[in-house]
Length: 202
Image (tube, rainbow, N blue to C red; front, side):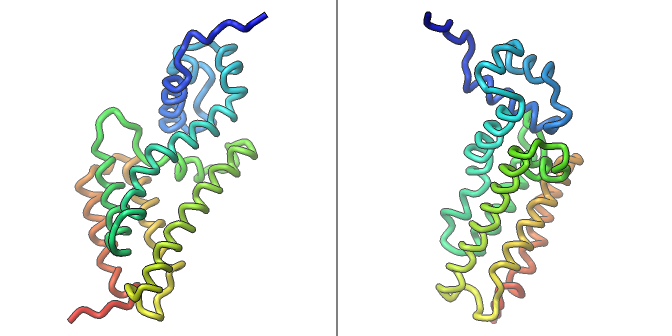
């Protein structure tokens, strides 16, 4: 006998679950919180997503494909490495001013307390962060090969520095920092670029 069709929009339900995890974190997001936001009951959640952990992992992938892709657009598209890094920091500052949006970064906040995540979910969060670092390092290595960075510049160290700044900005956003403060942080961090890149200004 064919199963009954779902009476809810799965994509909308997943988006709602993402906001709950983003606001509360994995451990503090109760099933009541999730089912209430998603507009479904627990059996429907399990039938559609498998488990709370599976739902969280799908939410992480959705976050990466939407929020993450938007923030990282400059890293992919900017004509210079400096513009790529600055664009990422300024985009991070800008989104903090959006109303009705959880503040901070789901991945960074989840990574703060990895012991609260089930093993597979923890591994998935770590993998996304590892890939982000690798993407930034590769962008900077390409810039070095093209002569944008000095031969003595260390792309791995530069990537680690700026992604640490970006992560810190997301924590400040969570604490209530607005776009003006975060933009000032981004501008201040970019003052270190010439030294890190080995660039001499005439």
